[in-house]
Length: 399
Image 1 (cartoon, rainbow, N blue to C red):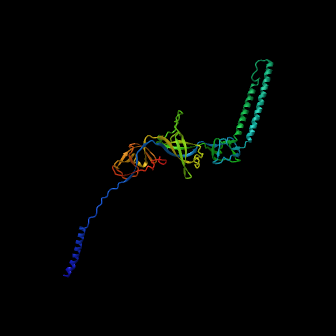
Image 2: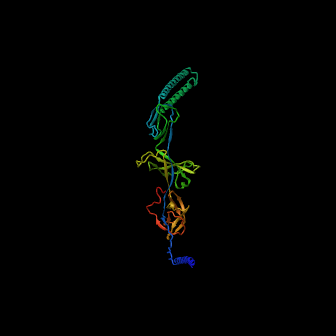
Image 3: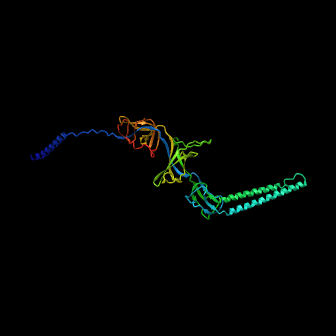
C-alpha cells in the first residue's frame, strides 16, 4: 500500500499542476491590439515662377601681363649708373632712365664722324672749285664741248658720296651714343634683373625682364558646352570682328578675404585646345595696380590665381529651382492638390552649380519638391513645408 501511495501521490501532484496551468492559459486576458499607421514623410517645396535670368559662365585662370619685354642693350659698355627702380618688383614710368653705360667711347666716335664730315665738305668744295677753273680754261681753248672728266664731274660725285657716307657715320655714332642711356619703354614693373654697377654688358644680351602695368590679362578656358550662353568676340578672315565685349568679374582670395576686379573679354585665341576642346578667352582689366574704391583691396598682381564669372546673355522665361530639385537627368517631383507625389519630365535649359533652369514641362504655381526623399513613388502622400522665402534659390554662390 505504501509503495502504491509513493507512486500515486507524485502523479496526482503533477496532474493537478498541469490542470492548473491549462486553466490559466485558457482564461488569460487577450492582449490589446494597436493599428500602426504609416508615417507620412515631410517634404520641402518651392512654387514655380518663370522669369528671365542673367546667364553667366564660371571659369578660372592666372593673371598675366598684357606686355612683357626683355630689356636688351643695343650697344656694349660698362654700367655707370642704375635707377633705384631697376630692382625686382620696382615700378617705373615710361621714359624713365633705367641705367646708363659708359659713353666716352661713343662720344669719341661722334667727334671722329664730325671730323670726317668736315674733311668731306672740304674735298667737295675743292673739287667744285677745280671744276669751275677747268670749265673756264676749256672755254678759253675753244676746242669743243668738254668731257665730264675734264669738268671733274666724277670727282665731284665721289666727294658727294664721301660726304653722305660721313654723315651716315655721324648719324650712327649719335644713335649709338643715345643708346648708352636705356629708358623704360612704358609704365611697368621689373620682373627680374641681371645687371649691376660696374658690370660690362654685351650688345644683344638680356639684362632684365619688364612688364606693363597699365592693364593685365587672364587666360580663361571656356568649355564648348558653355559657349551658347555668352557672346565672345570672334575674329573673321575678312577682318571683321564680332562687336561684343562681355563683362567679366575676377575674384581672388588674399589675406583670408575675397576681392573683386571688373574687366571685359578682350579677344579669343585663334584655335581650340585639341586636348580639352576648350576655347580660351582673354580677359582684360585696366589699371590692375590701382587701389580702387576699397583701400584694402590688393593689386591684381601677375601670377595671381583668379576665379572668373563671365556675364552672358539673358535667358527667355525659365523656372529657377535649386539643383536638388532634379531627379535623375530630366525629372522633378511635384506635389498635387491632394498632397500626393507625381514625377514630371521637364525641359532642362541649363544645369548650374547650385541651381536648375527649366524651360518647359512644368507650369507656374506647381509645387516642386527640393528636399531629399528616398523611395519616392507616384501617388505617395506627403506633408508639405514650403521653403522659407528668406532662403535664396540662387545668388553669388548659386549661379
